[in-house]
View 1 (tube, helix red, strand yellow):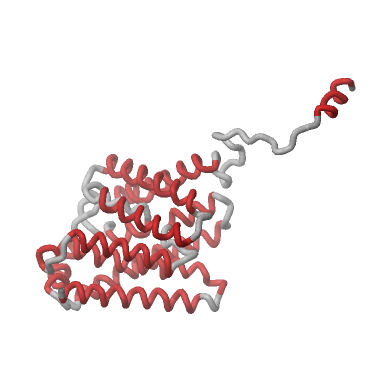
View 2 (spheres, rainbow, N blue to C red):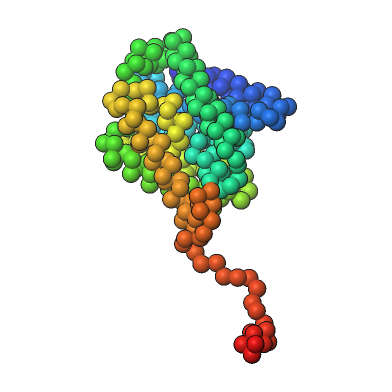
Amino acid sequence: MSGLNASLGYFLSVVVFAVLVQTLLRKWPRFSFMSEFSASFMLVACWLEIQTIVEVGQWAGGLGQDVTVTMLFVLLLTHGVLCAGTSGNPSLVVQKFLQLEASALPTVLAVTAQFAGAHLGLLAARYYWSLELTDMHMIKNLMWRECGTSLLVSVVQGFFTECASAFIFHLIQLNLRRRSALIRVPLIAVLLTFFSHVARSYTSAFMNPSLAYGLTFHCPGFTFKEYAVVYWLSSLTGMMLALLLYMGHIPRLFARNLLYFQKTRFRVPKGDKQEKKKK
């Protein structure tokens, strides 16, 4: 129980820091892209601790799978509520760019801030483990350099797993984006928790390039390029396929609707048609 209490204290500290950054940035609208920094930091720093509980907590702290699934859902729900307007997910930022809802410079700044936040989240988690407040964290501190990768299948299998997961996630997210936050945020939290649980034996279905960077890119087993193909290229591919299916086209790339035929709203009166034929 002491390990769980220490983890809860860590979660609270990370959340308070992220909220303070969000509050301060509201005074400077020019630096609004930095909100993505705090959102990504919160997500990575807390998710790394949940990974620690998954890897070590069951036999070092007596914490079972039900605890980790519940904590992950609470994290995603809290993140969705406190980081409203931001995602901490580069794929969602690029999606807005492809939908012509954001220009190039803000998109680049937001994505850069997300990866910077993810890296800081990794550093914060490592520092917390180095304090060795509990047996669980002492063990994690000893083994963090040889951490277990989240990619447990081949690169090809991992690519298609992440691509399919991202496709379904983005398609649902696009359909929920105009719904009330009371409906959207819990459903997205449940969806992400479900994907993470189901795909834990494959890729963990992060569907978030900066989150994957902070959680598994530093682990041995695959090269940086292989990780990038599985967790970056696949997420963007799945997102673009979902956007194409949802809208029929990708506005930033081409304006013509490739999938859906759009009928004109206004009909020409029959009298006008007959006059045109006589002429």
